[in-house]
Image (cartoon, rainbow, N blue to C red):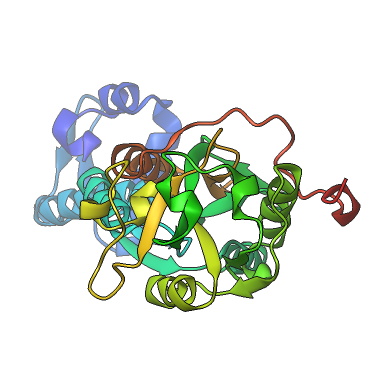
Length: 320
């Protein structure tokens, strides 16, 4: 193309940033490969042949297609197209999921997002098996081999029976829950977090009579209603009509359950986006920004500066 447009090997070589002899050799090699003479040469000028003229349009089209091909390859390399496999922990509220998806799709229209609901333990396993690109995990957990986005904090309150004495308080001290069973997620879902919560309860004067396990909102409320038990959850996990500081968590027949903040905010979920080291491309960055913004805007999450490393600690440290 350059030789045809310049009608001169010297000018074409200058335009291409190369010496003239290698350019002449390349044209000769191309002519041998095509078995077609492309140019008539003289001491003063180069004239494209009829065959060369016919092939020039094809050459321009091939070059344009190759540029599109390379641009697509760069977008794939930079994570701007293709498939992003992402996961959220089960406690992320629906409003946050919707806000995250909307923001992410706005940032990356050409990227397919495969969104899964996985516990922290399940996410760590999939990171290890290279089956997950990015996720929102609970801390503390083992973040070896991972990079993290900003750590965000969502303070926990308590779900308790309406007729409990503590339900009359504006803020509930953990010690006032003595005598109640505690409903927690199964330990296998996030072992370090599970142990941290029980340790914090003990340090603040609450040792549950027993620990029961449940995750579904209806199941947990049923246990609170009928099993002399309490559960922890953030304000944003409650229905919108129940998020006022003094409002009851009353949905259908669950009018006997109320949510109250904990005095001194001793318990919290701590989240961050996590991804394998070296995977932090444009798609992961967009997901991190969308997730962080959604958690702040819809779940009341705030920045958290941890007082200890986010790595998994030995089990012996949990019960000091």
